[in-house]
Image 1 (cartoon, rainbow, N blue to C red):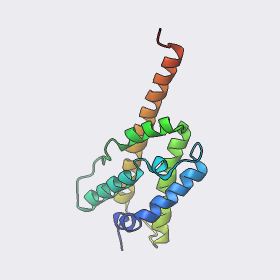
Image 2 (cartoon, rainbow, N blue to C red; image 1 turned 30 degrees about the horizontal axis):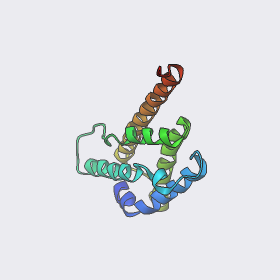
Image 3 (cartoon, helix red, strand yellow; image 1 turned 90 degrees about the horizontal axis):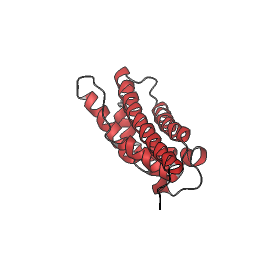
Image 4 (cartoon, rainbow, N blue to C red; image 1 turned 90 degrees about the vertical axis):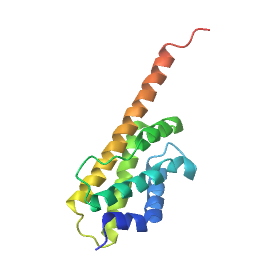
Length: 150
């Protein structure tokens, strides 16, 4: 039986396209180009696969890091006009696309550790994206209420 990393790696393009369609249809603030929608998600998927591979190789259980991608994604989404709930939901859409793909491949169950790594990666990226998005919004509000003196 293939591992979650195997399935995600073999079908990464399908996974990404499905996610793009869902985000454009359900979460984007308006029509955006593919690069605007994609942002750091292809790299995030590569990092999730790498974290899953580390778990397969027997790395001790730990919080799997996915780099500063969530932070950068939060900033890009802020500047592209996304609302914060949409940022959260687009990560949920990606998680759903992964689970749909696993189900289509005939995997009735994920190993507990695979599921744990997946959740850790998503939680880390999402927390970073939300934190940075909120910092940028707070800065914007402060600038609006205290415009620079000329």
